[in-house]
Length: 94
Image (cartoon, rainbow, N blue to C red):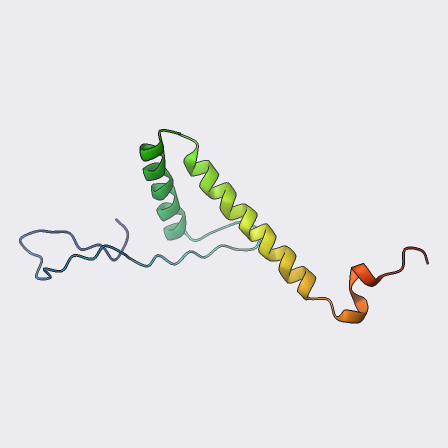
């Protein structure tokens, strides 16, 4: 179970049940992610699939993360150029 949940029970001294938790997700530029994040996202995808009835929701979730990484990498690459050596300022012929 993800960290941050407080389960009701006789041994629980906290009467205020938490409804939200923080799950850090670390993803490398080429796609690998930490085990806890993978487990969390897989469980989230299963829960979304249960609600929507579409078994592909987990795949869609991981594809969405992949697209976000690609977009972020493109932004970083674009911002790494200085004004004088940006590709959109290069001459078409040499």
